[in-house]
Image (cartoon, rainbow, N blue to C red; front, side, top):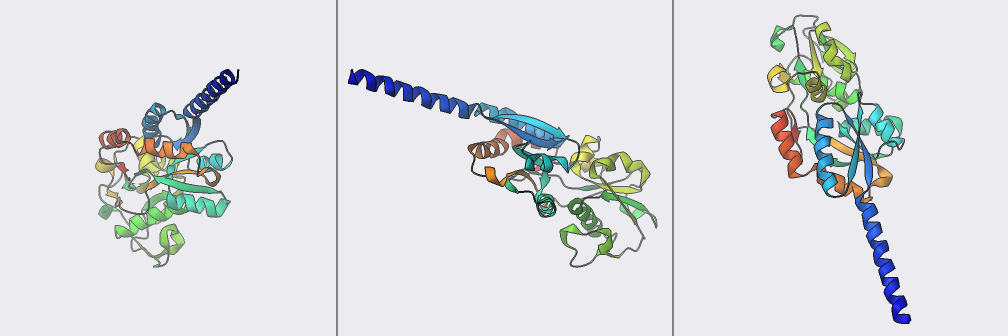
Length: 264
């Protein structure tokens, strides 16, 4: 009787262990992305992750603000759409308890125009559209400075604003717009600094269409963000492993032709 009881207990424990493993393997998380390359890449990540028992539900957003709000509010488990300076600005300004857990890809920002073919052709008083959020707006101004169009205060840093412009020989008019709206406003300005994901979503090809482009080696590598409280959950490592897989790297390299660059 005792032997039979022990065997039954062992079988029960084995079944419980198997059930626990199955539950873990069937775990589902929700990951927020913006439309375009981020969403396309996450579809590949989803396929890779599924092979290792992690199911990803992709939630697509059309702006930069909502994915962090949704993550902080518990409607997402992770997001993949922003660079670290933007995340840190959101954490500081809104009090989000969000952290960076992995690097993903870099989208070098470009300057585009439907009116001129080179920056040298810009006339005095030309209108230049830049993103209206602090980090991408500063990023655009730094790119304009790199191209010799203006000069910023030495201590302006990554969050430079038009108020930090100390030299503007062409009297350029900086027009601040929502980053997602800039491609649709390109005809209304003389040139515009556009984030690559929104540029590509609008049918622009950075390597062919940009009249100036950012150096990809900088602080603007994109990241995976999660809630700080989730940092030790097993799915986090599995998500990162899926994103950093050879399949995803091959997809990025072949799909985007150098406009999107893997950063791991």
